[in-house]
Image 1 (cartoon, helix red, strand yellow):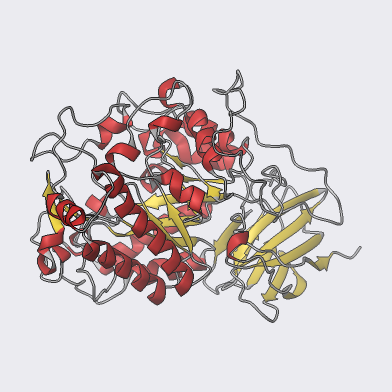
Image 2 (spheres, helix red, strand yellow; image 1 turned 180 degrees about the horizontal axis):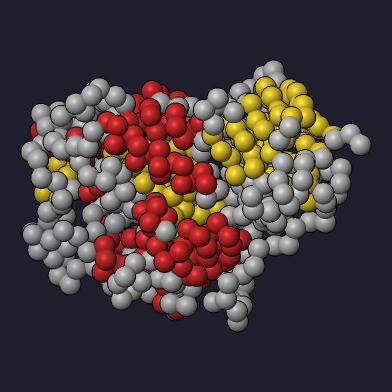
Length: 557
């Protein structure tokens, strides 16, 4: 079903594409998946057809009285603000143009049946929202520290508009980068590079906060928790930039592409300039070697961030998107490539084992058939590390659908979604980035809509943060000339984020999700299915917990 907003703030649920995904995923009820295999366990043999696209599970047999379980899958796209990759399309646009571009992105996500946006709110120790801690981003206003010409709060706008469309909004922070290679304007007076220059180090064409400096890590933690307190976000998200990707000359911009291509980084690496903080650690009696000390610095921030978010708002999920290849001493046979464990000092395996995150989104940016970095083998690796049964939602390199020699075919992304759906414990994925979906590169958006996202889906529940279901909604329904009108309201008790709606047309159950902020709905008649005969509704909270379902409408006669 497609949700269309009208001027009277009523949602029209039109039955355009038949919802053939009544049981989208195995075990798509609201109960959590079984834990993944224990760390070190031998993965299941790779099937001979691992490179083939996997069909979606067949729908459950239709019951004329009881709808099937709600489809469950986290479907997100990253929206990059750094270097104006995704939004805004260039710096210093008018407020009206920035808002129009944001709305277009959110409308595309909604039309595609995505259910979350991961918005970069801190590209490099700056902000796309009013902050007392960091300056306005030049990627937004054209000059770092300069506020928008027309006062407004872009993050608040994104949150309100996302929630109005039933989309989650996860705030994405870069934890340590202090200046991007593409930046053109001077550092603002309230930038950490000016306020605390001793904790910021030049590295190639970047500035980088030294993770060994307690003041730098505390500043990042303060920034994140400030957003958690002040904004109604659904998640905090950090990316793969911990210690920087190694470079070989002071003028380099960073070899992320080399790492993605299976390389190990710079040929002769330029040492990250943390000698002062390293010597301070040793003089203070520290006993770790330098590599373990660097990992401990990052680990301390990850743990503090997770605990701090929990203390502020227990329902805000914490997600991390590390480089997709695990530590060398645990990798499956045949997997080679860049080591984030040794080069970025990111011990993602430890974070999973300690439960310091709610979802891991490893950047699995390689094809299924590329054996040294095979998508499915790497996905199984991360599942084997997931002893705490957290969410594992891989990142897909959808923007690799381009005109380069390394371009993916759209079918590769559809195939990778099929792989995720074939694994127990994987109920979601993220696209990098929204640009490819906005441009419909080589028809990828059309293929996803037709082959992968035929119906809406709820995000999977997160029971370790709370599992109490909301009260069943209250509802009224009446037959109108062109459909069934619904008016929904939350029951007493905990707040509601969405309403899950099943409507039966003939023998076919169709599923839709409506935001709780838009409780007036119309289930439109359509040429193929006629009028809805039965309507069933439940309430869903922010952690994906579903209420008891209620029958709202049964067509007489």
